[in-house]
Figure (cartoon, rainbow, N blue to C red):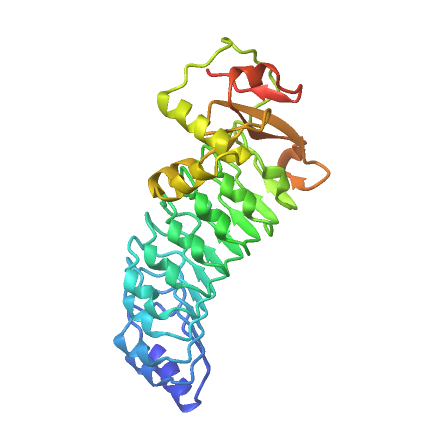
Length: 346
């Protein structure tokens, strides 16, 4: 039956071919003669590979391979240079050959939902035209930082995976509007997230987040979903000690940072420029929310509760959102404002 449909499509110089649900175990090789084809539907079959003839489909812009039996992303896809939409959901994919991305610079939407993918190759950065990436219900353990160079991404979906952290570089996705990372194992969100000034929807429900990044309230969110997270509550905590035992590294770093912050030592600035390792180390400084001084290692983590109810739609009508506040010393902790709360260690 499928061969007959392909022959009819060849005679009619068809631009669309629908072979959904035909119980196919192979794709008829004759599809290679459909040079004018722009849309090919192969959903709901039993396919586990593609024939080499698909390389001839140079005008194909949409390919649906959802609900088949692929164990890896077919390498033949790299020859479909006009492809814009690719569906590979509902397969058994565990492997993505890095070479697949070589010819997919025009790809805008990639759906890999409901597979068994544990890792994404760094070569995903080659998908420079990608706007929508969906990898819900997989086994992802991390997100490669190379993904964060895809400036056209507007929607990212990583729900129901095994993510523990997000890369700090996620803040480079300047056009991101929706980020869905529900049902993972996230224990926190990177400060880089606060650089996403076009982000409208953030879904982090069902993780292990206690507090949000310190500049979270600066993101122009319209919707925030954070139910089923152990968010911190307002419970005042007093300091057990009054002084610090700083490491020699921290003492030296704070001394240098104080001179850099007030600009009192031009010679010191010039010297640091000549030592890239020192420059890199000091660039990871933090700023005390009380005194404003720079320090190297996080000393005390507190939270401030920000009223977000009027700004955005939130799950379960959450009104006060706990955001992280960093303090450099117990002295600053004991002088903190009444709206800053310490984080108790259980």
